[in-house]
Length: 305
Image (tube, helix red, strand yellow):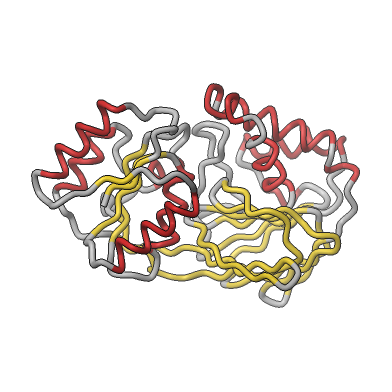
């Protein structure tokens, strides 16, 4: 099953036809064009229930995120044809950036890799929801940036990384210095009152192009959490330089990194923004993030770059 997003920044009808041609040489293939994120997740779950060997996400990180919701913890594999703006997850796994080459990898039917993901159980009032994050998630600043960036889809489509970067600086300089810490974050016997909590699942690339953001030295095993207290304007240049240089974020006041986290919890009063894989999840009162080891099968090279 190929689930495609024709609104993805690098999508073309010609590329879709080529991908379908390549895949159809080695498998029975069906293509669908869902009209919403909810329909994408439903169609992925339906395909898995019907016993497909793989569900292919042709789009950007948003499409990968939504298809993953229906594939995680099943025997069906996730295939990726990266035609989005940044294609973070595909790059991290070494999946070819050209659609036809990515399709040829899937057509070769290699043994899928099993990777871990994060399960988010979120609560808003009496409503509880479950979400899967495949490369990052967070509460506070990064989620606010995603929310603001999504308000201007044309600039997001046209300028990609530059749009996210300018939005991040705008939100960071304008809004967050006014916020008082109101999010109680706890994990592995640690606790912090913060404005922001970022969760890193793997050596993530940010939405600022190919620049890698590492919350702590080395690979997060399984997750690394960064808490941010009161974000003062005068500290933003230092934080930016530390990130660009790959320095120790613990050296910056109000920032604290917790490596080796299996599960974390948040409680917010007032509610805080949440995001997963660059997709806004709205405002939440609290919830948890739990590591699910080897729970997602992905068609990708066995060794990442």
